[in-house]
Length: 482
Image 1 (cartoon, rainbow, N blue to C red):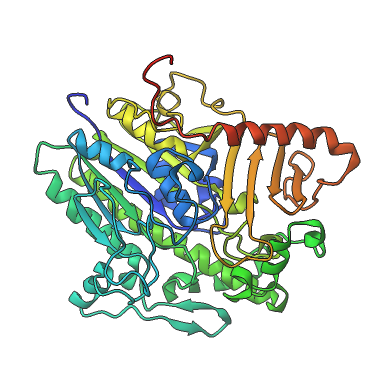
Image 2 (image 1 turned 90 degrees about the vertical axis):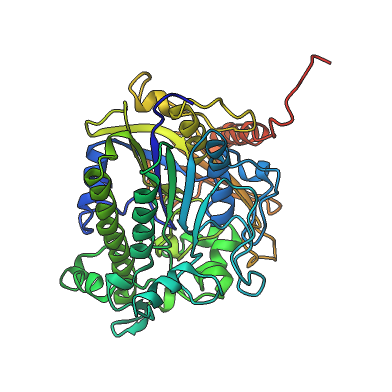
């Protein structure tokens, strides 16, 4: 590790799609602080998660390894204890590491998780755990924080749509709690001659769609301008069956949001609620960035803002997440700033994956590359040493029965996306998806069975085979030629 290693502030929201910030072109949201962060750093236009579901994605970006390599392919699985998180490598090198919010590398259902989720040796010295805002666990730091302030979070139905709820105020938000815990940690850690890493893992804007009431009310006057979801009647007829099932209700019909039963007003209010939660994230991130400035730590801190995966938000007639790989489900915001990096409103059009973050942090801290990592460091792009618009030829994503809602048939699918085309194989069904993103950027028309696209389909299938082959575990290392 170098003599003056940077601190690391890693902000990871939950289920936030890429097009939810002003700097990504959204004209409705109020995100001046994250827009300013993008102005002062590097914004990646095409950053992709390695799974459209929480646990596989988080295990992947924390280890720098693909979901099937980590063996943590499903929500409800526990990451194997021999997996090595980047936070553990940083701790071993001298960092003090903390986390506030969600980790989700092990089962977090209240029926099996009585205290906090079980942890491997993950490197986090301080752990303020709050899997989600629900008061469902005995040791829940967010709920205890509310109690100490004489507050109750609670949520109430929103009169204008039964698909939205509201909380009393931003003061009650889990996002506010996570930022206050972060500032407390940073304030304490800064007194010692030791670099720190802190993971801010707020639950917003994950459903339930329950923003502070004031944040949501801002959207009332513009409600009719909010676009309806990107859906063309009948488009799911030749797409994998799991999408057809979830069109009738999220999570295999078990979690509401039946698209056809929702009114145009319902769709717009859900979008408004989701955006209002993003607005709260921005306000609280602004507090955190100001705190770094006020304490003189901003100049030597690497700041990452991203999310674990996206949210369908009604696009293609589907809400929430599942075995689908549309851009809103897997493309996430990614903004990075730090010492020695480009800070002039730089935007990168390169394909990057969240699996690339862990090796980036090791290189930024001058720590030796861990041989088990499969990601490719972004540091030389961030410092301007290599081309900002060239990193990968394609991006790759996996779903292996990652949530248990689909059993007939079981949902297993993989995806590869090049600059022009996207291919999804729904394994075991004989069905898949192929999109020409140049002619159909909305991913509406499935070309899987179109004769004039057979050559493209074969070429993309070959790409997918190569990507799947390259996810083979690089460990254990070869020690001799035979």
